[in-house]
Length: 424
Image (cartoon, rainbow, N blue to C red; front, side):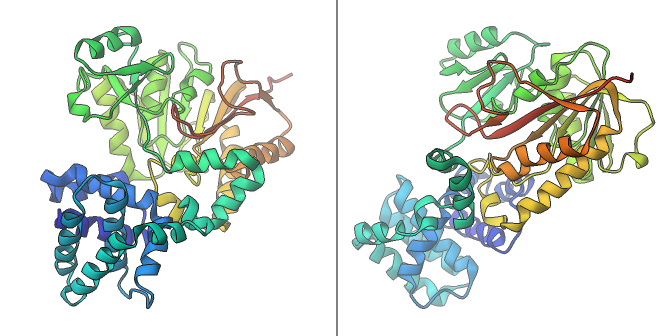
């Protein structure tokens, strides 16, 4: 256990230093501890979810502060285990002491032991004090909480609580390889409890490795949040259309578009390192698309002049709607980032409007719950653009004004469907 604690502490310290915990990096870290991969993932993500409260506890246990961020992160990891884990408390403490030595802090082993044992003795008062501040109560940065409270009022509490939970594991059934109900029956026959949450969506009662999912390697299902599955439904696809997925990586929505309809799809992404994931996903599903590395905001460098009938713009954003999956995001973001993202998002909208055919539709998507990235950006675009109208979303869309708030069924997303006027 101490090796998982130590490595989790290193990953968390890196996040606090400003380094993103990408899925690829977490996967690489788990390879070094293959026998403890699940524990490492749970420790890292769980500690990041509750980091506000855990740092408040650490501050009480180390009144003089802790110079090394890795040592502070180690205390947070161990405290998370003592609060949330079923591991025996004495084992958590003993292994944390070993982890301190493993990190090169043998001289601090006694401090780690004393701090954690003090927490066990004084758990009730220390925990009560740890939630007396906004950040300690919600384990989100205070500025983040204030933005949500300003825009959502009493509903902000539900958004914040959702961000502290474990995300549902939802599958998207590939229509080309079977039916949703047929796959649900297959799961039931294998004793895997699940429920239907959308036309192609099934949520498992308990997460499980993808290798244990029937037909996964044959492309029968893909892991995709139910909220994200609205993209293919809302884009209003028809056979033969020329479609652009402008910010495609890692490719979940790319595959869904192709499963939904026989289209001519181009998938772009500015990050060349993330494109192989798109191609691997399409290969597993038995689908094909033109996958290219390009900056969607500069169509002069990649567009061949032929207009697209549909454009999916899954824009870069704060990821504030998916922090339970990517809890590092809330500790990496700063208040000024929202305006920076909004500027980038508006620029992408304006650039991609050039490649959209008259009568075509563009779906603007973010995984954010901050209005500044969502309704605010769309309002600015509508004000600056003459040949556009925003289309209503279907009556069964579960959000208001295009905004899905995170809950037990789906993550937080924003959708706006825009249509370009036909030439007179």
